[in-house]
Image (cartoon, rainbow, N blue to C red; front, side, top):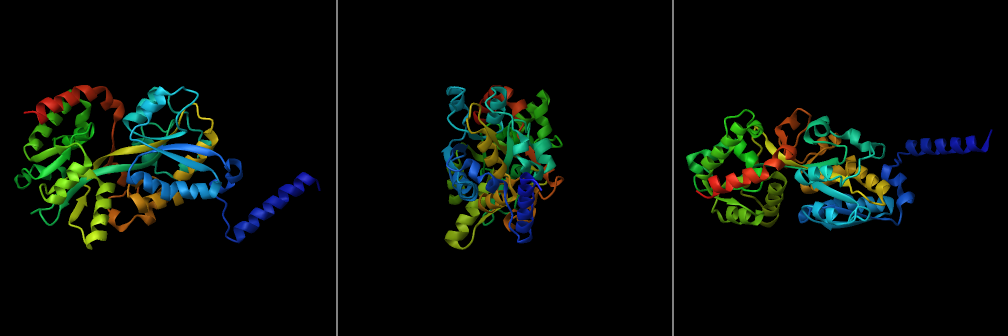
Length: 371
């Protein structure tokens, strides 16, 4: 018996013994010696998102691999990457969403993902891979934030159930919606007669209908908000009784109130016609010297354990199919449990809307905000 055969046999017997004992080697653990002592710079969204990302994903990954993750915070990393030398990027992995992801694809800021290093990709919902993401060649889908309706259940006469409910007289002067592009394009599309509403985006006539719908809703809003703090302060003060916001953030507010007061007056709903979402991708930045470690880290972020950990902390929509049995009660009926459920989650079409940004923003400002 050759020495090489003896070595392979011993290794195989060891693996069998470990499996019998219930010891599982994760992808990250297998890479521990390879990456121990290395540092990876990862860009993620700031605020509570970063705190939850670090606790649920970064710390466990560091413990498993011995690698060090250095987080950078922003809401758009593309300007910094474009300004840096192509062979000396300011970070190795960037979180991106919609317009900045698409800009990076166009400007060749992201390296193609080598999926042999990201086997957990096979665990993602097919809808996420094939529909929610505009392309997975340059970025791996990580999570999504979907917008829905939020209201003060102690102040409304009738709880809203659809987007068009905010056109009812009882909400006159008592709601607020966001004016960020392209979010306003989507909520206004749901106010049109198009079915589904977002189809209005794809024709000049439909976009005219979107502007008219926004004008009609403006008769009922108290203001269109620019910042989350502006929205929440008005809702907490009772100056408005309802509006729309990212569901993950709504849940965070509900939990804050419950922790402080023992109960919350806030309630939320994802209407049957659905809601639009931003889709976060994790991308390997061009010029990085840590491509292998970057892809190993990204693979861990979509592992079952990492996705469950982040879901229970931040309450965004997570893409790994194996999170379904772990969906928190507060997200039941909102978080998709099948590819069919995902059809209510409408991705922002940055490829279509970005070329229209200037035109639509000017029209919204002149015809809706200033009248």
